[in-house]
Amino acid sequence: MGIQKDRIKFNVGGRIFETTATTLGNAGRHSFFGALFDDNWNLLRANNNQEFFIDRNPDCFAILLDLLRTGDLHIPSNVPERLLYREAAFYGLSDHVRSAKWGPFDGNRLRLCGSVTGRAPGDGTAIRAGPDGGCAVAHGSMVHVFDWMLEEHPPINLDYQRVNDIGWVNADGIVISACERLGTADGGMGLFTSSTGESRYKFNVVHDNQVKSYTAGALSFSPDYKIFSSCKGRSNEYGVGVWDHVTGKQIDFFYESPGWSLGDADKLQWLDRRNCLLVATLFPRKDNCYISMLDFRQKEMVWSWSDIGAPVTVDEKRVRDAIAMEESNSICVVNEYEDLGFIDLRMSGGSVRWSSRSRLNKGKMPDEPCYPKLALHEGQLFSSMNDCISVFCGPDCVLTSRLRRSYGGSICDFSIGGDRLFALHSEENVFDIWETPPPPII
Image (cartoon, rainbow, N blue to C red; front, side, top):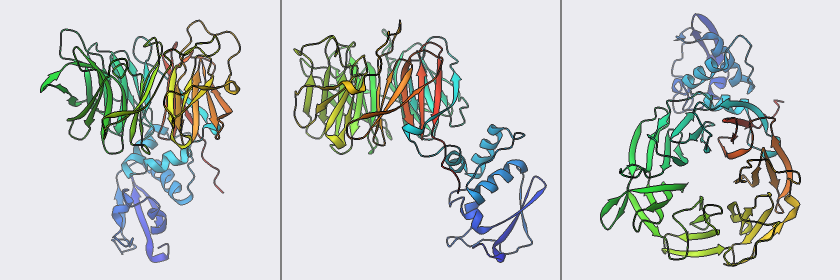
């Protein structure tokens, strides 16, 4: 490819463009241009004098063609970015544009690229990054969905049922967990189409061959299309349910044992290497903290830790969030001062090894602080505290950078996905988008 006989002409909106098969091949097999080649990447039309007519915007075509030639994206001031993004979607080049606009995710190189003001009354409660660079934000009983261009899709309204968690099964599917509404069969968990807000199906809890109403809480997903949710019903439906997200059918349920807490869990995390589910119920939802690992193959709790009976010092207080770090065989926890602690996964019931190196907030706490949250992505650990997010790297979780902006109040939730970090602020009902700048073109 790339020799003279592989030259090809396009007439786009009345403007003539000439390029080579080599350049078009950079678009990939599944793009608009990939359909112009056979299986051996030879052009299907050999007549060099024949043009392909495309009734689209020629200015955007010129930008995208240059992107395929050089790998660099330059958007002139007279071309609206949203118009370019829509044209890129038509040609199947959205991934190319995203890769040119921001590079592979690196917490130490993130830059604030924009903020979006919430469009619902009241504070946002949860934000979840989508796989393609979009996000979903929960405000009470509403879920607002944004694509990677930050254009909002039709909102999802659960009719006064408070949303507890959101999760993406793919770029066009969102699972929402919600509180049961007394006196009705509403609540639980459902799968929705992200682009339209259309309900696909509801995930039922079946107990003694009867469908039960329930409140669904924290969500997690496994690579083999399983959805996990903490559940609490009116009788014996306390525990963690498992569903097949393709069929919507319940396939398992791990019932809560006496003296432990699963149905009220704040966080679920699927662990691929151990083939187990981390379940964490934390203060202040409960007076004590319960962290366990469930093996659904054996239907047993294979690891557990609780602070019941443990002394609570002024410095350490309570565990506010937890996340498993499989590579180091440990669970990282955080308290309200953003001190990190580590629990050894190789033994049950061990103590927390607190690390004071991470303490960042020695000044006055805000009037309405948000509890810290933890996330793990590509070997980097992230912890939110008040109005900033700290990044920790290396086996010793050394603080390497901090993300902060000047307004919006405390960060009540954040999420990483699609090579972006989204941070939801509590006071101004606004979320920030952080991206890694693309590497320079040499």
